[in-house]
Amino acid sequence: VRIGKAGSKMEGEVGGQCQTPSHRAAGGEGAAGGNAGPMSSSQNGGTLLAHDRSVDSPQPSHAAAYSPSPDYESCRSLINSYFYQITMGCGTIHCTNRNCFSSPDGPRLDPTCAALLAVKLAQSTTHFLCAGAAITIPESLQWVQLPANNDIIPMKRLFEAASERSNVQAQVEVAATLRRCLSSPECLSWSFLLDGKPCRATEHSSGIDFEAVDEAYTRLLASRTPLAIVNAQGELTDSTLTDVVAGSFEELFKGAVVPGFGSGTPHRYEPLRLFLLVLLWPGLMEPEYHNTIFKKLCSGMNCLSADQRETLQQWLQQVKPPMLRDAIVAFQQFITIYVNEYRCIDDHVASATKVLGILWASNRDCKRVCYKEFYNDAINELVDFTEDFSRWKDTQRCSFSFCAHPFVLDPGTKSKLLQLDANNQMRSQIRGALFRSIFGGNECPYLIFRVRRDNLIRDTLLQISALHSQHEDLKKPLKVIFKGEEGIDEGGVQKEFFQLVVRQMFDLNYG
Image (cartoon, rainbow, N blue to C red):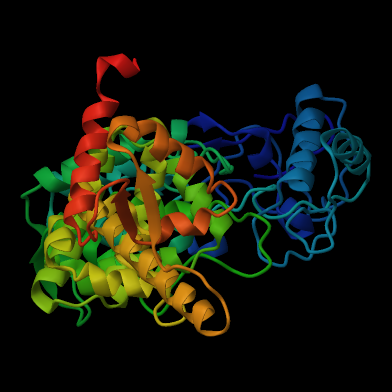
């Protein structure tokens, strides 16, 4: 889209929809003096068609020097383009435009100062606007071009077109377009956006239209129509829409653990969208994709920083319960298969459990699915929790244990862990007391209660309150002595003591 001469009205349309002000400006000096008609921008490997329907006469080649037009809409559009460029940037890594937020040396201003600077830059005779006018336009910026005509349509319509019957040439071109979009981190990160418009992701909002994602994936599962594609050898073969999507995701994660991220980019949220879109893909339930997609997805998500994982957790709160439940089932299935077949806890099981923890954390506040959905029967039945508990206590020995992820454990397993922990603390106190008694101390390795049968509750509470400054003694093994009765507590006296205490505690005389 070009900047018109003085007095001309500057407008732009993408697929029949009026663009936002940030999309109406030209890309730098070189973009201002283009030819009339469609403009093709190949930045990030994508194509966006735009039509300047307001230019009545050809633009001079020296139009890079632009004089501000008295036309209100043109001036407002130019100022808004500068404002978006200053506050949001163009998304290009290491942008060289000093007036762009994406540049390492770019401005970091509050909205008021940014608006003043935008007005000042708009009054200049020479303009430096990044390509795309403050927002990078990859191929699948929610819009893709169908081969049959020049219409620009939403990504979900591409899934519909791929599942419909058409001629072989149209099928090949639709499949190629779909694969190109889904295998590109930049394209996938800007697909399925709300209202079909480019929008920045924030810490609390992904900008993804989850209804469109659900509709596209539902059509994907329902599609049984053969789809003609060209394979790697250049041969024409039949495939399915599911295979095309799976192949695209395999290409997406090939050679990069964390695709879509580059050092120095100020926009750290948009690349996270691709993890969310792949995470909700129903194909993760299929074991055939565990090695090629599932494991790499888990590895990539675990390579994210703590802030990025927190952002994904916030975004997942916007996902509908059925989609969240399907994602949980996919991870539970993967963990169950690995634990049942290999009877070991390797890096893949640990990685999947950590990602499942992100799903659990997102559900913790909203409670869209029952917490029991996160219990894993294979883990609770087959894992040796005595060994797992030892790994949990000794982090230098192993960095992962299921005890550190209690959301997968049922109440029975948790009670066993509490008993293990109590026994460990008791043995530790016995060893400490014996060690101190050997080196000159006179410390008893047991906690001894001397009580009267007729005043059992009072004597017990008084002796417990006397230990308020010696909490560690409460972890020692208990010995009970009934005053006036001979005998050594080998377990029977202690058992009788607890029976009497419980009976008297529930006596109505004690309220």
